[in-house]
Length: 63
Image (cartoon, rainbow, N blue to C red; front, top):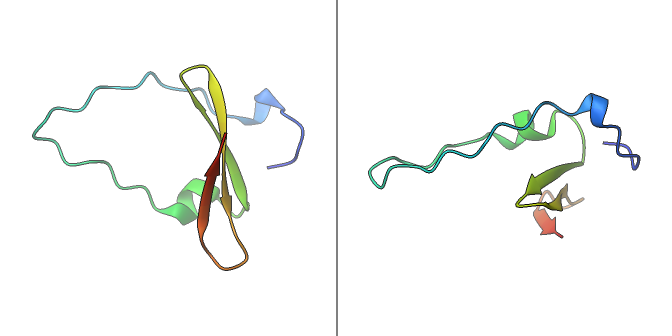
């Protein structure tokens, strides 16, 4: 994703649903999450986090 914060490119954020204690966590494939990019921005509780894919194929989450 480019450095600019073009909200028109972001999908609408759905409200979080509290999982049932007996529900397994959702599994997201990183290729689908990144869609060819090297980083994504995650909005959570009024803050923005950056999830980056490193040159060594590791994930780094920063605030």
